[in-house]
Image 1 (cartoon, rainbow, N blue to C red):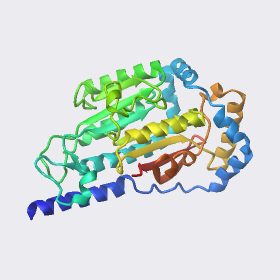
Image 2 (image 1 turned 90 degrees about the horizontal axis):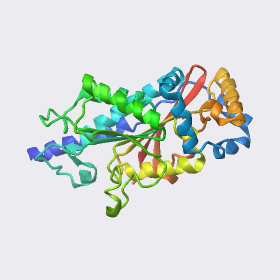
Image 3 (image 1 turned 90 degrees about the vertical axis):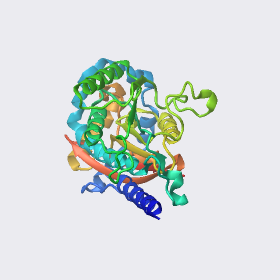
Image 4 (image 1 turned 135 degrees about the horizontal axis):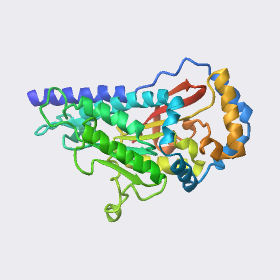
Amino acid sequence: AADEATAKAAADAADEATAEAAGDVAPAPTARSAVDGTAAWLGGAATLFVDGALPAEAVGRIYDGMGAWQDLEALYTDAAAAAVAEQFKGAHRLAVALRVPPGKAPADGRAMPRRLPASEPFRVVEAGCGTGRLALRVLGEVSAAAPAAGGGGSTAAPLTVEYLGLEVSETMADITRERLAKAVAGGSVQRGTPQSLRVVLQDASAPGWVGASVGRAADALVAPGSVDVFVVTYVLDAMPEARIRALLAQARMALRPHTGLLLVACLSFGATPFADALTAAWVAAYGISPALVCGCRPLEAEAFVNPASGFAVRGVHYVTQMGLTSQVLVATTEG
């Protein structure tokens, strides 16, 4: 009876953590009329901008040239990054709640498909890790918290975190590797195993990095259905429509069923009159040459992240910083 009560309590905690991690994100207190106004201003050109996005190789060359100067984008992305980090912390709490302590098994069979052994790592994939600023932020917070697997006062070892960064720019990948290594050496980020922090030169929209079969497992970077959180910030807005859908298909394949969390941040249409005007100027520059704005243009992520792509949107949040509006979207895997 005691074991059943413990298992039920763990299942209830997992349900609460699921609701917290994937709960609705309160919309920003801004009028959507400005957003609609920018969209109307674009008119039929919106599709042209999407289809005219730069190929991965060209984007990689742009960011190879930028190097650590990319950190300057924090002037207009930090607010969105903070929102993503908050959702990430909720996802980590969910992962802890879903792990079953050693020697325990949930008595409620209904909860079995969602429960995981305590030894199962908390896996994170970031598509387009850039200079590693977001990775350092979220991994540092998780390392500082270092909760025990299973929760509820368990004495089990802290939940192992595995991070995989995917990047098309070799310069960016090198910067992230170097910064993660320094963070590990300084103790602000914990390394569970030698392979727990990896940064790989890989286009996240290309097939093959998620092992779809036993025959390909040796070449894959992650197994299907094994990732807890997939993070993609300021990447979709630099991709053509076909690659956005391909990336989301890879993310859906990699994420755990039911509990996998997708965190997206991207440039969006202006949410204030000034942001509306600045967005119009940005789009005009993109129309002249995408390279003028590092290959990025505003978009609405819900056009791609939806039930048709295997995701349920749990919340959308708009933040405006330095006159530029960003959209933060939270979604979970369906089925």
